[in-house]
Image (cartoon, rainbow, N blue to C red):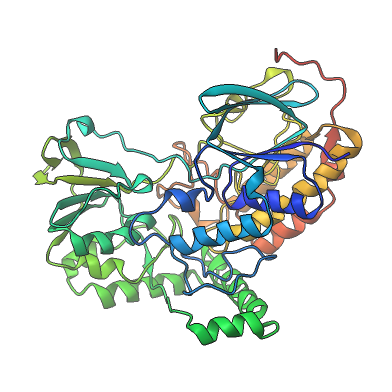
Length: 488
């Protein structure tokens, strides 16, 4: 008999898991989604200019090669429409419980007790397996700047965009200059009377070779046998062969830096502004921004790049060491609480141990999927599975394939957990691989904890991750039997 499965989250990972279960003929699953609709980060991030820096034909499921993409790099509405298409085509929408926020998941020695808030009431249900698919970029991070609550204008985070607030003719302050900021700043600059961009650290930026797919191209992708598969494979191989070596400080690192510097020189003629925008760390240490409209927006006469440290937020704007910069709107493009995996959920495993306590020094998991002491709990897009060079959808599909293999064993033997010795060996291999990557080169990024440990990124080629996750999981896992529990 197939185990019952609770899937937490209805973004790319949760939907992939649900679809794979449905295609395997397993209907004993429930998807918990705290929001009123599916989509995860592509539902939440609806700011002007929101999109993806991975080409659309690769930023999609391998089993659902969508031929209707209109651009080489997909915009947020198209990605969300693709996810809705997949949910409907594979008939998993009716398995999603919308408006159900999971507060706690506790292993009682045999099954998981999952407690959620739904329709104003608390409900606890038992499942054999829990698959966490809440992502790494789902909880907005707001900086701790004195006086934020004193601001008399309108303020919001980029992932909680206030679409009712018209920016036309406004004095706008954007705090942050990463990937989200680079996408929204050109659109904001076109509407605002004046825009101040507060930059703490500049980012490496390379051009985005975007293009539209006309009707003939879309027809060709749909009807010409093998065309879409070949195009997708070419994008994937190019990223693996050229972008990954740059992050591993290999042969293409110098080429990446040259491309970024050439892009900066071509688009920013002012040497003073160009100096402000030139990073002092190697490309790839922070996420490289892929955008062709960002630099031109910063050169507009009604846009200022402010590098003076922010002292406080005042009622009328943002105060730096050089004085007050007036604003009536503040947009915080300050990223997410990316290293706080699964928070604020309370997750307790064998003997009532807390996952938050076990991860106090940084999140870790075998293959980014399983944690010792937490039987039949699996993570999608978990610790050390994020990519800086290729499509995360590829990684998610590898993880789902691994979880499906584990479910077969759970069905036969009951709860399983990853062996502590397998986890320890994995941690050693991960640390050795991480030492070769550029992320440790003295920059601050969302990839790292405050102590400098990289908890988010995968330090190898995706081909290696696919091989590792495709191995039969029997040797790394053990059956859990007769375990006493302190869970009431």
